[in-house]
Image (cartoon, rainbow, N blue to C red; front, top):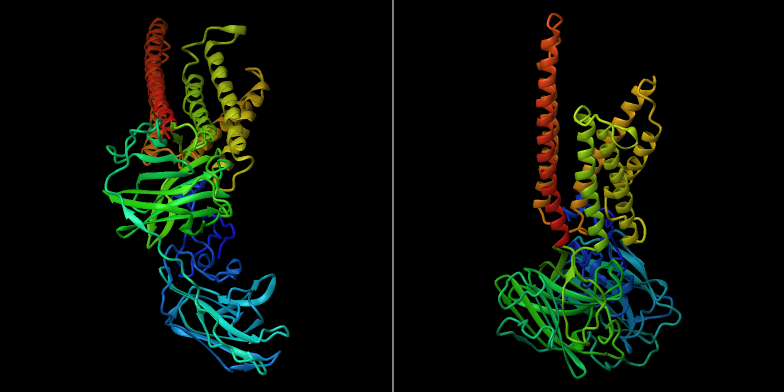
Length: 624
């Protein structure tokens, strides 16, 4: 029960696995963007035991060997379930009925082993009696060497046939691992030993149950960690940068202190479930050396684990850790441990005297099970050797490329396009004088702003693809809307290049097409921004981001409505009076002058408001 097949989360993770007890688990570190509609209902990196416990459908082929669910809890010592057999003697080719029974349980794994070598591979094959509750597994590339459950429904009895192979050992014993619920399970429950007809009497060479590792000593921390030696003796990662876990409850703190051939690790973060960190060769989850401190009631379990792709982490032995200690205080989890810089012969543990990206994450936990992290992991800006020169560094919850993508899109679709639309709609009479190239000033301003929008959109559009290395299946509808916006942003200036002259019969069709494409682009862009803000890859604060975006939409629509009302009232004010031409001209000039001043004031206020909204969003992006 070591590795766990990769699964995906929610919309693209619908194949996410469950444990033997039927409780859905969600992966721990999610470094990539996810669909907002799905992530709001769901998480950035999952870490812990997957093996057999990760599958309500019982397909636990990877767990044929040790048969140990790695839940972060010790198995029960006294079995309450039993295995019975239909006969104690067998011949080669015989079919023996095997029954596993006892109190209600949800998951199981049943195998036959050589009774004189219980650590050896499974022997023989099974035939199902009831395929509704049991299924055959492929172990050692051989179908039918083991049997497991088909669902997490409760059951009290399982019956199968075991087929004695031509190469059967003299003595065979059946072993079963049974899970009642996540924290309660039994490993390698033994059956009576059955023997071949002419075999010598069986004698028990050793215990038939799985040997359990003794508990490693764990102490209680008496005081918070100190950041006073960061950059001097400690290599520290902190968020916010330069925060002190002794004084600030919100401080996320991770330090490494090198002593000869070992490193002392200290980790502190506000969390009610778990805190964790991992060493990674890149900025993506997978093939990472991870360590977790999981709260369960008033205790903290410190566990190393290994990430195999976008999958539930594989819990591993704590034998490589020493001097473990923990502390719980006011919603803060603190834990520490020591490990050697190099661990020759220990699989999946990285040598610490090399450079890695460091991930920090936290999330919810229940009964020792972890769930989706509460936000994107904090990732260092570059690779570091934590055993090298002590430093004091920070990290970011979002990639610089994604930050730049969001910033450029906000500038383009909250500022340049919005102002350009207002200028074209309401300022033709205000700035009607010719400007460069003999064109009216309003047209030059409008064209400049719209071209800026298209250029900014094109630049921003490329950035997520560079970051992701291709198309992201975990960003929901956002990339589809983004591609639509990109298409319209390129199409609009191309259409404008073929604008007919003012009195051309096709001019009206062009005007409607130009307006329709531009309006559609603005609507889709706003929808894409709403969805993009919810993506964990950008990690904007919630719910302020939604309120701010709604405020901008109301601000822009309100400005357009105000200018429309003003234009309507101005047209009613200037009435054509056939019997008083002088009065007409006087009224027209005065009204136009008043209208121009009003429009300029409104535009100035609107631009100031836009700048405020833009600063709010850019500030939020910069601080994630």
